[in-house]
Length: 240
Image (cartoon, rainbow, N blue to C red; front, side):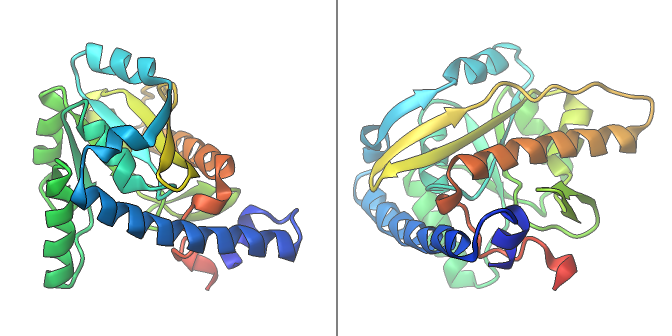
């Protein structure tokens, strides 16, 4: 509810409560859908009833320098990743669960869907190598991360700058992509145009500028389907 108040100060408390309640429903459906996909991974395609903007992704891959896919914990992000994995070579950077059983379970479920992942603790050169093979490096970059701050819905907060660093080093195009649940087991995949940026004389200033642009793209995803975002994450830890 604190997150919703920051993002939607102009809405009533009842309106914000409705959005958060919808988010809990979305989490439940995400779990049910994930189990269904374990039974039959081909359902990924059957459930995808609409795709917009795929031409942006195809054009990015055509440049031959890899693609940085940036997304958020919205809709069923595992379904979105599976849809990508069934059409393109892609590797997702993830934070593995601390519990060994949970880590193995989640990884097994992802492998069953044909998803490839690497830990965020892996050397940066390995991630850069994915881009050099003209594959997608997928990053869910909407959660809090210490060390660097950028505005997110008008409030400065800890933000992952990894996507911007990869873009700066490799010039791989940054493509925003997310899925929206139209109804249980029915999804729209939304792919946005490339996030454009220019390399300035100062490295850190350029990385900061790229990060701000990525956050703006993430904000659009949240606003498109606010009841499907993971409001439960402690996004604004600075105010707690």
